[in-house]
Amino acid sequence: MRQLLCFGDSNTWGYDPKTGQRFAWGIRWTSILQEKLRTDYVHVIEEGLCGRTTVFEDIHRAGRCGIDVLPHLLEIYDPIDSIVVMLGTNDCKAAYHTDENRIGAGLEKLVQIIQKKQPHAKILLLSPIYLGEEVWKENYDPEFDKNAVEVSHRLKEVYQIIAKKYGVHFLAASDYATFSKDDQEHMDEKNHEKLANAIYNKIRSMEQVASRVTEQFANVS
Figure (tube, rainbow, N blue to C red):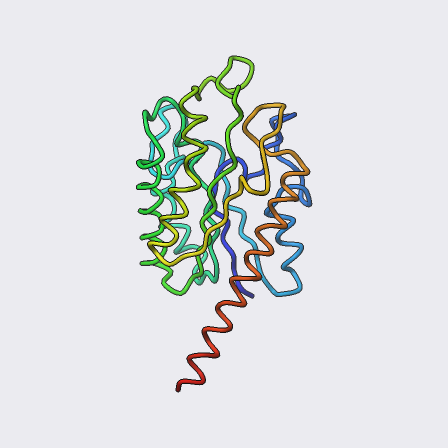
């Protein structure tokens, strides 16, 4: 049984923007991905947590700093065949006074940890969906501000550069999914399905690339 670790925040956890509860199995994208990969003997590990960041400490909630918990997860679930990382939305919060480059620097640290502790694992970096233009308003999530919205739109380019730098795979969630109008921040049912399909197709292409590389080495030897 191969293991695929999905490491992310509330949009990986499956936060329902209408109820504030968790979407049921079969709705959140990680569970849809599991159903699609079941016949391939892949175990999808759902490691999403609301409020999780790359490297920033949440002063209101403990245990949200991704870099603190990632090394333990890589050891707990060893060996890991593939890892999907989708973080950065919470890093945009006003309290962190950050920008896309600092968030990217945090993401790089996560990639370095993965490549050191799970050197054979295939890595797929996902730049997150964009924040809605009104997410910072009182009726939504005042932890964000106008600048956070702009930063969220610039993460795609930064993440793509990081993926190329470290020789890992990349997918922009914002190319396939968007925020719900209910809270300007989280995906609804349809967008979870869209993202799951996009990730599934990307994983398939990653496997095809890996297979071709293996064949090339076999022919050379």
